[in-house]
Amino acid sequence: MGNRWGRACVRVLEIVIVTCLAVMAILVFGNVVLRYGFDSGIAVSEELSRLLFVWLIFLGAILASVQRAHIGFDALVERLPLAGRKLLVVLTGGLMLWACGMFLVGGWQQMQINLGNSYPVLGISYGWLYGVAIVFGGGMALAIANNIWQTLHSPAGSAMTKDLGDRILEKMPEVASVEQKGEPR
Image 1 (cartoon, rainbow, N blue to C red):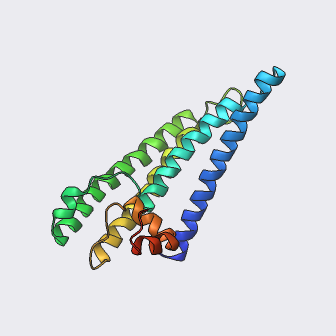
Image 2: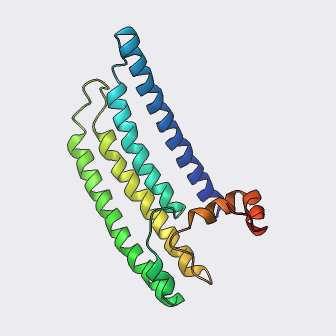
Image 3: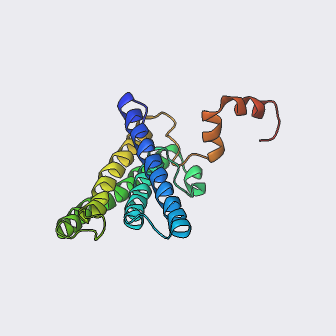
């Protein structure tokens, strides 16, 4: 996502993911210390950590899609002509958009079913657990639609996946200068 709004959304995703991970680490570590050191514990630790983990995974999947960092096998795709690559991106993107629609519908239904059920210790609705499917379906659909748009409107067709080494070189120019001098990574 090259525009300002897209970069802001990515930044918010990164902050939420890091916050989820930090809170999970603090809760689990604190619970271990309290349990073994003081024969006590944090009551909400297990339920909140599990809930945050689910959100972290789904938000991370959206972020990976935006950054085209999902694992992909593109050996066949790279051998296709540009028109074939673009057609394949549109077809696979269409299938993934359909799956996102299924996530949206299923997530909404599950959230409605579980709104009346609450976590025993946290006391919040299980709707928070199933609501992530709605956020995931919508966020992933936007990321996929953006990837399709970029592929169709770029002259050379954008890569379906980005090599990890290429992404590192984009973010760290000093590594790129070492690469150009012929020194190994």
